[in-house]
Image 1 (spheres, rainbow, N blue to C red):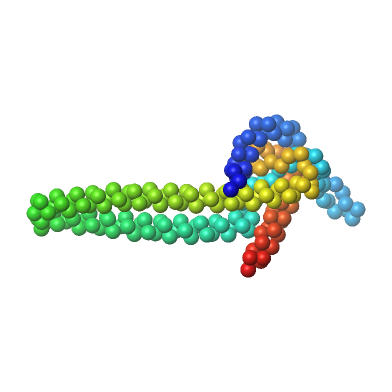
Image 2 (image 1 turned 45 degrees about the horizontal axis):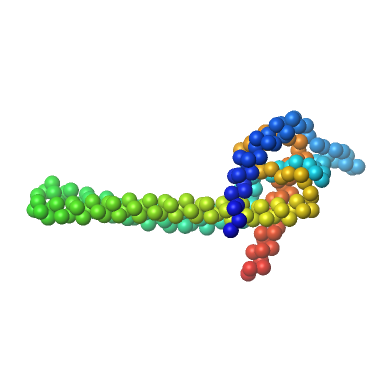
Length: 204
């Protein structure tokens, strides 16, 4: 698997280098007048430094939504099982305490059952921690899959566009403000979804 922490790493590594460059562009818009009098946005040319809005990509990319749905289902199932086991242990402890309070078992039996419940609690905590790790791994794998898909597409995309650099912007960083023509999110998102739908149809 590629090292597909690209999305997060690009934000952190490129932010310092590019931050100053893009903020110098100010709040200008790159609008030009079409022949019919309609306003259209100019496209960035070859060699430009452009960016994609990563938050928008992750929100509207069909592959991201499909993977998110799968992971959410797995997480819900895991959490339901953890909750079921936790509730059972809680009921066992409550029942044990009630018997102790009512004097329904001898001291030796109470000690044995108490030790058993303590062991069950340790096992439950280990199980819950393991399942939490599984949830985190599912989320990491999902982000790696998305990162790999986006990186692979952008490499092909830029082979044609030949931009000097494509930056991923998230939460307003590293791109605080830039010329509108440098935002290629819509074009990239359309291409990603078109490619993903084509791939899904081929697998059917």
